Structure formats: structure tokens, C-alpha cells
Amino acid sequence: MRSLPANPKLAPNQVHVWQISLAAPGTPATVSPSPLSEDELQRANRFHFEKDRLRFIAARSALRNILATYLNLPPREVAFSYASGGKPALAPHLNHSALHFNLSHSHDYALLAITPNSRVGADIEFINPDRATGAIAQRFFSPAEAASLQALPPAKRTAAFFQCWTRKEAYVKALGAGLSLPLSSFEVAFGPGVPASLLRIRNSPEMPSNWRLHDIPAPQGYAAAVAVDNPTKDCLFQIWHP
Image 1: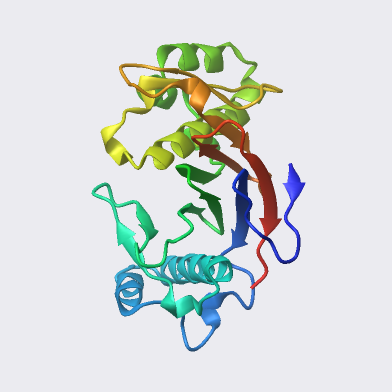
Image 2: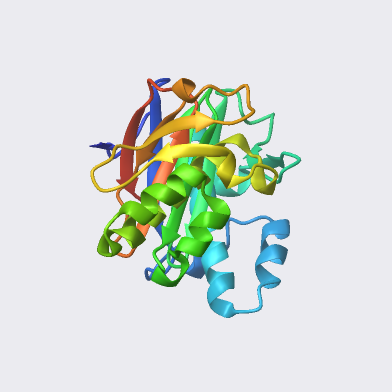
């Protein structure tokens, strides 16, 4: 995976992926005036815990600042529309270049994927070994995935669990299907040294060969993946510095 240049230009065959720290000093959570809309500030104030409020502000501020560089707009002028499943998109009057994006965040990090003319999904997860259980795999993974996980040596299962989870979530988020698409209704390749790929989709017109999954570099203790519905797209990665 190649790194983004200092002043990135998004080519038609590219996905740009940005890793965002939500806890570093000087993130937009501490910047005034805020680039967020009034609606976003109201959403931030509904969080019960202060750390969650600050993480939300940092993630949405980074989203606005990064998208603004591609749109050549002030961050506060970036506007969104929302699909029925809640997935955000650029407001139609701004999206002349047909940009698609997806933002994911977990604990102290967020991941943003941007590409033109293709659906895209991103997922980053904090690796919590307590979640990487056989019972959860049996509940959410396909039978073949759960069996593959169980066949691994115990020391390999936690990393493989989150490898599978992020690849599946990235695909679901690219579709914008939310909870309406069971994670067990499709299968991804995963395991030590196994390249990311979409293997099978049950009861769907979607073709696995039309999709490409990318493993994304993640901070220690995290896993990350991106899904895009164009197998020829090249993936470029960058850490965002506010």
C-alpha cells in the first residue's frame, strides 16, 4: 500500500484512506471556532461521557477538514445528506465529482476512506480479546468463518477474529445496509497471511468479484479494513495531522 503525497489529488482509480487520532493534543476537539454545524454540536452534547463527546467532535471535525481539501471549501461549508440507513454522503449541490466516503471510529482512532464513483466502507476496531469468542463468532459469522476461526491455534484467534470482523463491517458499511444485512449472510477470507477478499454472498445480486477488500495499517491494538465496489481501485494511506 502506497502513502499519499503531501497534497493529494484523488484519481478515478484510487481510494484515499486517512487514519485520524482522536486523542492527540491539538485535534479539532480543542480548536475554536468549531467547524461543526449546529446539528453536529447538539449531537456532541448528547453524549453522557466527556471523552465520548470529544472523540465525536474530533472525528467529525477531521471529516470536515479532510473533505474540504478535496472540495476546495472552508470546512464549515461542507454539507451532508443521509440515506435511509443513516449513512452520510456529501450534499448533492457539493458533489459534482461524485465523491463517496465512509468514516469509522473506535476508542482513540478513526478511519476515513474517500473514492470517486464507487461505494466504499471503512472499519476500524479496538482489539478487545473479551469480544473474540467462539460464541460471538457462532452468532455473527457464517458457519464456514466460525469453523475457520476455531481451527486456528488459540494464540492466533483474537487477531483473526478482528481481521474477519473489520473486513465484514467494511463491506456492510459500503452497502449502507446497517443492521438489515446479517453478517452471517456473506463470507470473507481471513487468517494469518490470508489476503483480504470477499468470497461469497448469499441471496444477493451483488457479485464478490465486483468488490475489493483492503487491509489497512492500524495502530497497535487495532484492526482496520476498507471495502470498495471496484476491484481495480488502488488504495493509498496517510495519517492525518490537524
